[in-house]
Length: 265
Ligand code: IPD
Ligand code: CA
Ligand code: CA
Ligand code: CA
Image (cartoon, rainbow, N blue to C red; front, side, top):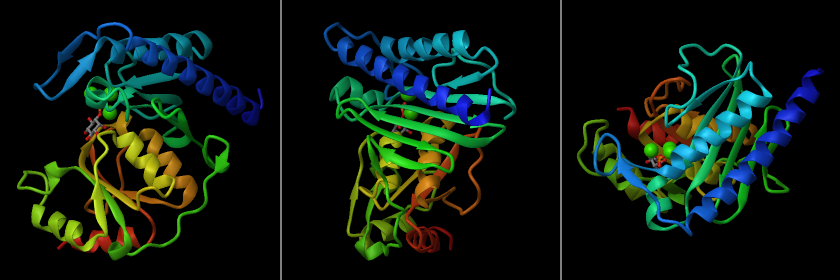
């Protein structure tokens, strides 16, 4: 199969499966969720996080047996290297919102080939907004092609940041983060890293920063950002490692540099 055709098929199926999974998530609100927690009481997981991950793995394994899957809930492959095609899936990004708000949660899928980002989907289930990007072909919000991001200054920027990082914590000098908060036009926190990255890619946020994300939280977002000229690195300016936990600073050009000056001193 020609390369273009291969990716067209992947796109068509990834989109169709995502819409189908979103319908299952919406429908699940009619039943009682089974909620348990993982590492601590704020680290929640539901039966639907697991079901949706298995739903994608089943579809992918049946259709593309040579592809591998890395999923948050651990039903996928044990991925130690970046070779071949890997689907990096967060079945529900924003599980706390899924449970508490029944909105502001997303399905996030980043598809990589030999470590390079090929396709990203972030589906905000409550609003039915699909953020989609394909390597070299731009990024879209539903049918609307997203524009390249313009330069921005911190004084005119709305920054996505979670309050955790503004107070004393072990991951960053919080006084540097406080400086960013004070100098910005305002801050927001949505509780879904994937949605926050999609917001940066679509210009609804000017920047997003966080001290620890896993591959499934950012895999799709990075591909979207890349298509619109957004800059994403770790908060120390170094490159993000696809298969590891990373801090993330994602921002419009110019703003990324300005925020880094506050963060690295
Ligand atoms: C979480 C969300 C949240 C972020 C956490 C993630 P989950 O993902 O993206 O916004 O701050 O670091 O773990 O567990 O809801 O998929
Ligand atoms: Ca989780
Ligand atoms: Ca997540
Ligand atoms: Ca999740």
